[in-house]
Length: 139
Image 1 (tube, helix red, strand yellow):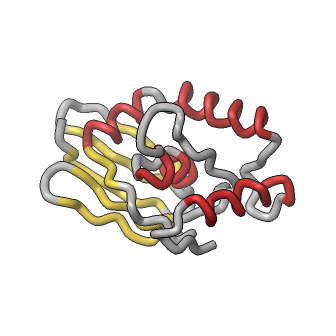
Image 2 (cartoon, rainbow, N blue to C red):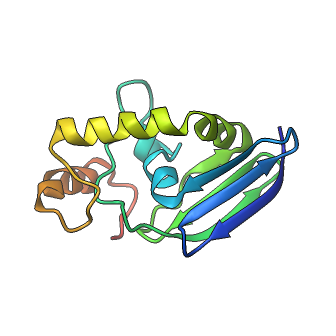
């Protein structure tokens, strides 16, 4: 699968990806951010995922193709290490509803929130800063 169209919609905060097989997905910026394939978010293996909190208002600053296989997306919170392969974008697009439900369930179970200023998120933000000394986090 190869994208034939990639559009950023600033007002609706969605990235639209249309593939050569006719499939088309509208992916919210927040959804893309919390499901970033980078090691900062996904961890280095199963069970090492880091819950992303307070990302409701995140925007995409830039989206640049990497070779013929991926998109590097830079977000307004400084996160820019995720390489979104075409296959990954199609996979999360096809499973968007289920993945979003899982994410909201994890947030609820952790007592965290999508809201950037929610005090309940503080422990997760402190953990994020201390667990990744090689990267400076913004936000």
